[in-house]
Image (cartoon, rainbow, N blue to C red; front, side, top):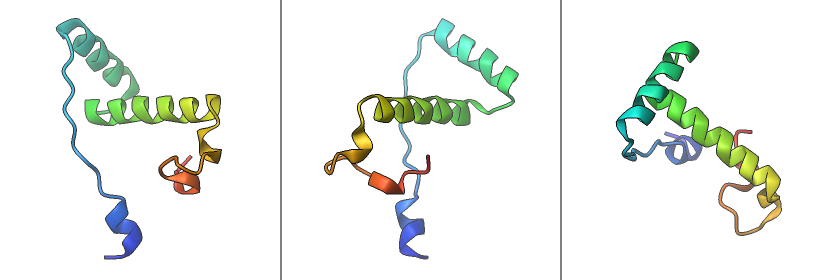
Amino acid sequence: MGEKQKNNKSEIISVRLDTITKDKLAYICELEYRPMALQIRKIIEDYIKNYEQKFDLLHNDNYPGGSSLPW
């Protein structure tokens, strides 16, 4: 297995949601034809991308990932 593949491993995290938020998310997932885990992943990745742009984090030497980010 190459070095790049080793660094691409996914990590599992747990998130607690109240019932109405979970139901809303499930509804949106159906509309988007995505499993809940992939929808949550997309939401987080979109948020991070916007945050990075807003605060110009990609030019910060201490910021993890640097230019190897997929977006």
